Image (cartoon, rainbow, N blue to C red):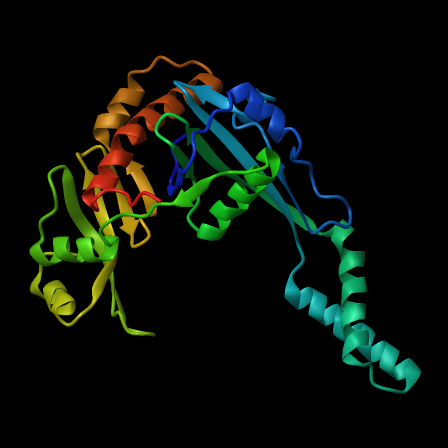
Length: 302
């Protein structure tokens, strides 16, 4: 399985734990389903799913982990309707209006009653650690989702010295320059999607999709002061993706060169397919990520 999004973090100190040691630490917080009256539950689960009980998966020195979150679904409309009915009943019985505090307490009681009957859904968040390259890569489209995983990992390890990427050159300014000139560095091709934003507070936003970004109208927006905050790119005809102003990679997609490489692998079981995908993905990204930093002047070292 390939990550669809890359939230990127750099170790500020060497990661020295072995896969076995990391697995032991993750066992402090294994995933378990929600209890009757719990609204959510969060913990670590086996990346390979039902094919394994191991909380880490290792290949070529890269270590994959997986967090799982389960949440109960209580529609607000349903809760509010029941609350209003109970409020009306109590106010009729007592002959007086309930205070705000009483209404809040009543709502909490109703939620407590409904939780055991509520439907639940779960989602997994994958991440991998590259000790040699000094990366933590989280398959998360939002910063909050990535931080939830990192916070849980930090609790298990005691500390987690990682920071978001900080480059010498502003990604937004560099991508704006590429669009203005419609020319990117060797190995990078501009595709057909972008998002432009005026730098002022509550400035205008222009979104273009399936659009020729070399057209004059794009340059007109840039000349008026808008900056590129998202841009669709292609790296060496191997992967395509959307890059944003925080250097988060969204909608990562492998292209024919890599698909052919995967197709040539003789994997019979789901576990073998998973391992092959993970090996190819991590090796590919180990080549790509340093080049991504170079595009923006390299890292600012703390």
